[in-house]
Length: 127
Image (cartoon, rainbow, N blue to C red; front, side, top):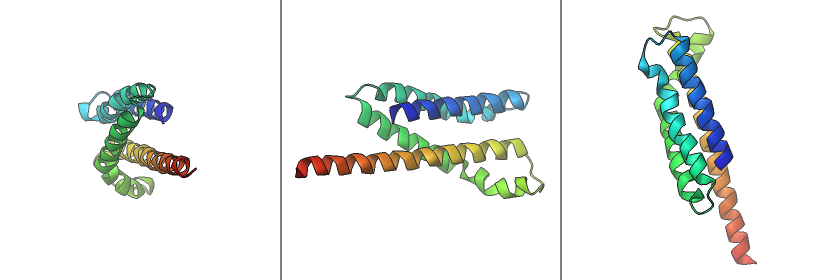
């Protein structure tokens, strides 16, 4: 999960920088994905250390969950954007939706990894 966390952090940083510069640097809020991506990148690097892995990934999944919760509204507006409806800030909706999807997939991968690790631990104890 450490490498996935690093990758997710890089994706969110790129999304934030792309949206910031792609919208003509109109608002610093376009950098919000990068503000989530940087700590995820750092936590992924920390998780490369076997001793710190569990703690770092658990903190990372909380950040991913917060990232999803904070951007799910953009995901809900995505159908309006895709059907050509009127939105005040269509670029913001697209970026929020992208961040929501990326964070949701990350949280699912983390939960799956936690379940897999718990089952492996239980199987090891039973044998």
